[in-house]
Image 1 (cartoon, rainbow, N blue to C red):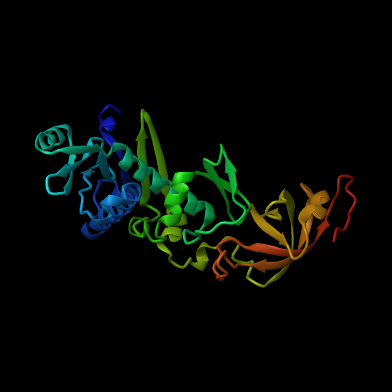
Image 2: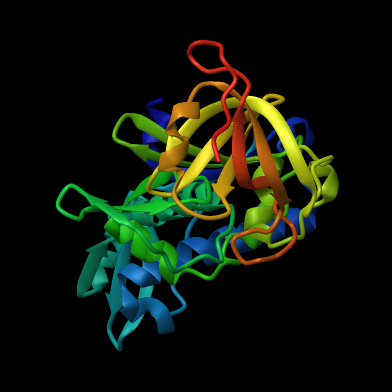
Length: 318
């Protein structure tokens, strides 16, 4: 771990396809370019003066898995004439500082950029779509320091305000180059060393499409037999109710299906919570943007027929 303290963090691909640290030259170049573009974007968000500057972003490629690490000692040097460069490594920084007139430590800036990439991954997985940049019904915590954004299932993810702003300002395809290389046997990992703690965020094949904007294959669909527009009466347990999102959850064949009433509030269906029921409605596979490609089905339901109530007596709620 002592050696790892020399680094701020890393981008890494792990799995059988990169066991010996070997990856196709073009894919390696794509990974480096994609990583550079993402880190550079968030650095410039923090220091806007750098947007028109061709500054260096130093990295080291290490063997083991396929890994790119970011050195801990990075400094921004303003040389006479307004030229801006980066010095990395103790000796290099000291040597440049001898003849340069201004020096700014970039450790926190680059670390925050790596953390921003991690937050883009978390938010993307939470929403299922990184093109979503406008949010309704947000919640706040810790004196507005945390912004709670809701997904289609009514679940909230709380994001530090600065990283929320970074996400909103980022291009939806910012991580597409590094995400395109993810396969079942090649998992992407972004790591950041915060003191003695390693914070790591991974991207697997399951969520790759969120960041590449590729059309999801039907084979990957959950419960593909439930087709869009199909009328159903599915039996399962009502596992949750969320008044804020006005949704219920139906436990069905190992999955929880999001259920939305065709009209009115779910409050009138509270007696069915945690009971085995028959959900009557129509399947929807429209995503948040109205596209017919949602991986997980939803049910727009008309009524719920409890198969049993607390007294094991059948009751019908409409």
